[in-house]
Length: 407
Image (cartoon, rainbow, N blue to C red; front, top):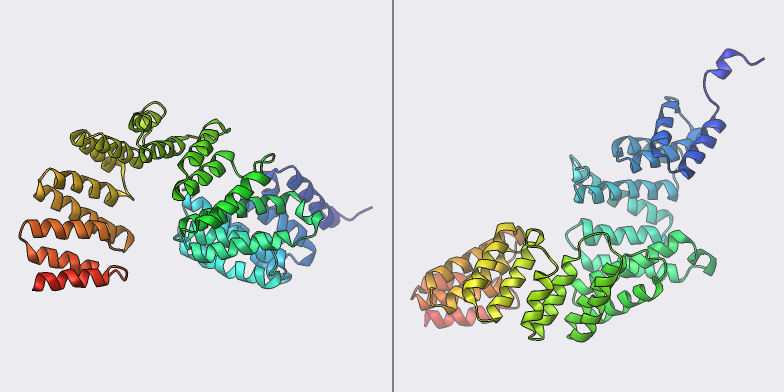
């Protein structure tokens, strides 16, 4: 007969078996409860249970508890899997933080944690497709659009996947990561103005992901359309957007209709441009950039008063693109000869851009300087050109204008 102390605690093997079964069932709450069965001074024997429990806690957003277990596991046995798991834990927490569920009290510590552990994971396995992809997402989406190094990471992930043996390339995990890396590489290349490369990646993504849809069709088609618009291929872009309208998608499609309106506006089809928005995006759901686009359409129609009202509607909701809207408002006032109103809008546009993005708005500053000169305020014009002179690509031009005003 077994002695009582042998029956008071489950065996390590039994706990590992239950942990594996619960993980197969995706029963994260039950798996997380197994944390209570880890001894206070658990050792190597308990690593399979600890790894599974940490994963479940991460899935439930219990990042502090998950990190503590993984750190202990890594101290016991340092390997790529645990370093990668620690990197993923920080990565997942940051992605949830970005989407406000839940908010992290100290996101900077998680950024540093991810950077530490992704470096460690890649030290163990430099050819990890998944780790290279996550590094790219961190740089392009969690950080402030560091698309140059992000694109390099996505290229590495794509290259490493394509070097894998055929059997590994067919695995669900690797194939899904590859498709998403193609999409993310296209997005970063687009942001960097590398449109040929962006088009190559996004069209490969669309072609290879026709059946599994690891990347949602509406987003693939929309990105392809954005690239085509940037290349001036408006008819091709319109065809891609019409496919995006019909693609399966649970969320709103306002961004698709807005780009269809932009294409129609660029082609001079003003009624079609307005119709795409007015018929498909209810007023209470229109984001600030959609109101701004409607203002652009009305301005092209020669209805400045209507355009001004729409731009003001855009400002009510706008927290990121106010400088774009204020610049348009300034131009409407400027064209109407309302110089004081134009100057105020240009000043607000330039100041918002500098405050929000820590950079100067060359177009707003040029317009501001022009209005100042028209008002015979040469000091104001000099100040505007002085700010323009800080922009490397406009410094020479700004210095010429300053010399002109001095003469």
